[in-house]
Image (cartoon, rainbow, N blue to C red; front, side):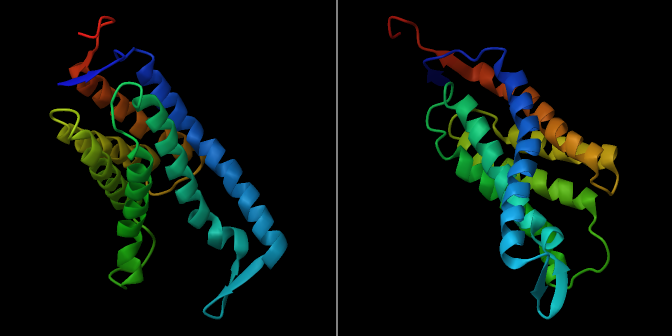
Length: 203
């Protein structure tokens, strides 16, 4: 059981979903601003190993993933720290989970273990597993049965493969902002039942 000053309120869970959803457009906007500045400096094309690439297309994910992971971690941490003590590392854990997930997704291509287009089904499951484990490392010291958090992340991200297929278009981005957040919000609601508020007299 966790004892904290504030009892979790019902608004925590819709706010969890809403904030996670708005991380997508905010990250896209910041990504656009950053890439616009870079294009003004280096031009419309960059050369990597002698191959010409469109600057925006080549660098897009290199900025989008760190941006959305930092935003997601920051927003979620702001919600959790009121109810759970010692979650200051949530931003780092979330960002690390996102980056580890991307590394797991891209590693087979970098090592020439596979050819062809990226399998988004595997990518989504890898992202859910990596983020879930990274955040679980913090939750397990504060909540019993925190292992369900990993399952919730895998399930939430796994649902993306059902709804988006093997493409990530505008609808896919909408689902990306809603599905993992909705499943983890449900898991959070169950886990946070363990939180016991301190009474005004300090008991």
